[in-house]
Length: 139
Image 1: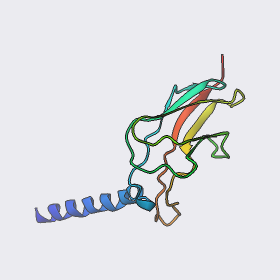
Image 2: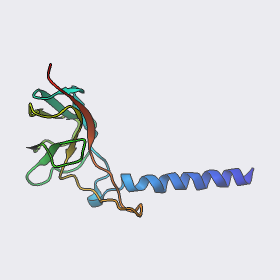
Image 3: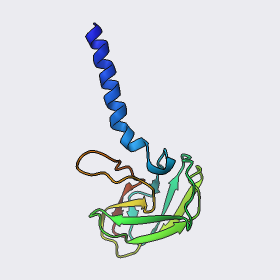
Image 4: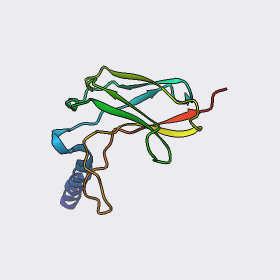
């Protein structure tokens, strides 16, 4: 039975170490804004509202947050909006999507979020605020 307890401790440590890359971010930022997109699916040419209902106590950088929308292929942002709203639980930003966006998966993200890029060695954190949503063609 002692070996089972020891295995449980080892497993717990492995989980904690594995998660630490995503929870301990550079600069003291210890949380990610939980972005939400409504509506999803979103219609190309219509408005979406991006919110972050859970508080995340990080300071707004000089110049504000750069909120971006990218397409599923991970290319350059198709639009960027800047806001000085804090992620204090009341964050809400409404933006108009371009009418010529192709149907498919897109992402909303905070481009200037402080994070440590990951690499193939498994070190660093890949933590971002990115949130997927679907784009559909207008009817």
